[in-house]
Amino acid sequence: MGNGFVKGVLLLSFADLLNKIRTRSISVFVIQAGGCRGCVDALSMALSEQNTIKGITLTGNPKHADCLLISGCINEKSKEEIMQIYEKIPSPKAVVAAGACACSGSLFRRQGNQLYIVEDVLPVTSWIRGCTPDGTEMLETIVRAMENVKNKQAKGERDKN
Amino acid sequence: MSIFLTEQKNGELIGKWFAYKHTGYNLLLIKANKKQGYVEINYFFEKDGNIDTIDIEVPEHSILPSITIAYLEGAQMQKEIADCYPIRFDLHKEDNVEKKDFHAAVEWGPFHPLLPEPVLFRFTISDEIIDQINVETGYNYRGVERLCIGKKVSEALEMLERLSSVNGFSIGLAFLHAVEKINNVNVPERANFLRLIFNELSFLKANLYSLSHLTKCLGLLSDYSDLIGLIKLYNEAVAYATEEPQLKDILVLGGVKEDVSNEAIFQLNVIIQEMVQGLSDIRRTWESTHSIVNRLSSLGKVDSKTARVSTGRLARAAGVYENIRRLSKLPYSKLSYEVSCKEESNCFTRTMLIFEDCLLSLSLIDQAIDMLPHGDVRASININRNGYTVVREKEAYGELVIYLSLESGVVTDIKIRNSSSLKFPFLSQCLRGIQINDIPVIISSFELDFSAMEK
Image 1 (cartoon, rainbow over the protein chains, first blue to last red):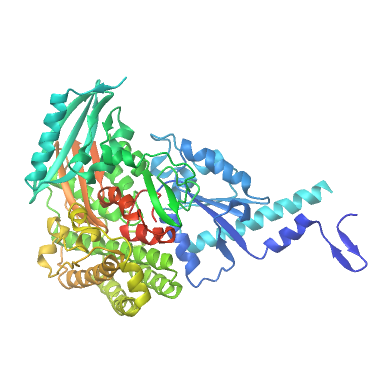
Image 2 (image 1 turned 180 degrees about the vertical axis):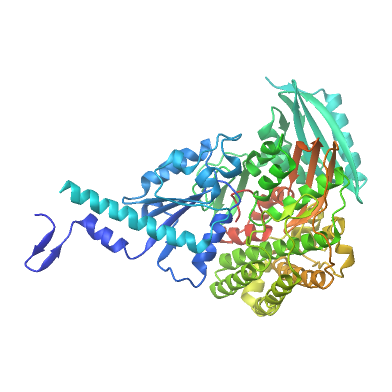
């Protein structure tokens, strides 16, 4: 029995049902990989303010997250841990690189501690450039990144069928 | 293979430390340099503005005596050197007490899965009371000091401004003061006043963040929301003077990048002075709420002996008068201000000092804007002198010290010692014997600013 109506009752697979529920809000797991913390401060401020974009919350548990937001430069040591955290986030998931350090390495690119940008480590859905990026822009990007990921997944499923 | 220094050499070094200690010198900075087969270590001591050094050269893989015998506040600086250079320190007994076997220890936090590198708390508890505790840090500033070596002044400045979201401006300013001191640069007066205003704005922001962290730890969500409102007000005000609320890319050698019109700076002042009422209201509420006073007063007590060798509000709350602004090259001497102190250093007195420091910054900004002179904001300069210097400046949480060595406009050596390096060695003794749920409050009131660590 696939998805569909049976005697007027909507039947969905449990995974689809979970996804439907998750469309209501976005939980973001933030990783400050190393840097000045300016990006995380900007995001916290945008979340605390009266903002037109609502429904974004921060979570401390990767298993509850929909989106992984990474700021700062990634080094050899944090690379492994970031990948582990990424694996724990359920699909569909978005990865957002926030700030100059995460997007391009900024001033610290390929210096000293063998630094990586997010793209070197994980498949990035969206980039938020700037040092420091605007908080509201970060919220907007998170929403759009999630939308993109879900659209891609829906398209993939349609193609499969 | 480890090389122990001879007993005579050890004894001489320890003797010198105690000689400085007994003549009233404070430990300012420890830095190291690697040479061929040797490591050079420089200990900087300070008394009444006079700086004296002990320079030693030891073979690689040597084991040196620990300066914590005489100066406990040197523990963090010493650890950073041991992490970066091929030498070790023979920790004395008190240090070894903390390296016990933590059977069935609860590893609590840090709140973030990636934090074990910058800081790791390990402790054992009995009935929710902390029994033993071991707090470790990794690299502070992630080798940015090393990245600066070989860079031009402007490139190094860009990196240093990005070291910390709260103290980045102060670090950049102290670095420029060091460069300007080596090259005998005279900064125009208007630029100096603008630097002062921006410096105080950065203190204000850092202090507001500090208060908001503390409020969050106490669970006072309504006050937290008010403080976020004040931070928003700050951002709104700063937008009149610069597009960057973190005050990056404002400083240049010999002045500031762009002039700010008087009109814009007056607008900034009008908005920012609105904070006085908000801050006073929150402080009054806290002072008159017994539960807050009682809880905070019973936590994070620091004895006066420890406070004397510390810095910032940790010291001032215990009655140690510390006015780092007077050491600055900025025109603070033209303004009228008084630095507050309290009698006993605990979380409550330190928190009250944060409120007073915010109000002091607002008053200094107001005075500086009133006295803002006309003229250039940038001197034309040529940096070609070689030399080194030590600069002491104020950062939001205490004293900042920068050692800088320049050759033909290129950084050849740099060491940054922020206020956290002096405070951190005392954190574990402050956490011992307290309840587990009080840890965030105490850490917040210590105001540590390690890269990527925060509260």
